[in-house]
Length: 104
Image (tube, rainbow, N blue to C red; front, side, top):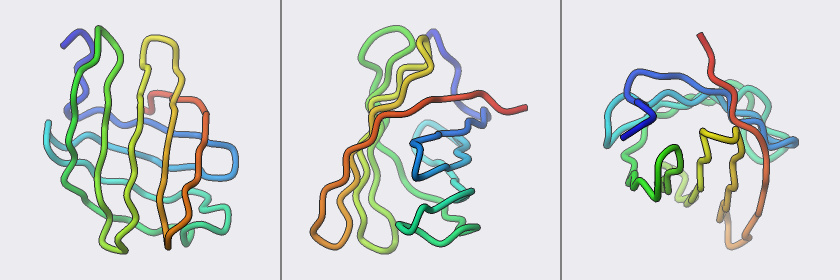
């Protein structure tokens, strides 16, 4: 893995939706909703089991199911700082493209 993710924290900025996301391990992550944009309550924090697969150096497919039943699939391109996100919530599919920024 060319990008070491475990222990790292990132801001996922999808425009309407902003999340601080930390990779706790290769199978677990914790996120905080910074700005839910009407899709999630601001400040909501959750630890989820993730399915993380490396596509190529610096690019990962990351998916998980939240306690609410929402399902999320990301293509996370750390090399180019680009995030492609598909979110299914309450029977509606949302598609976002945004940025990834490493946080200290």
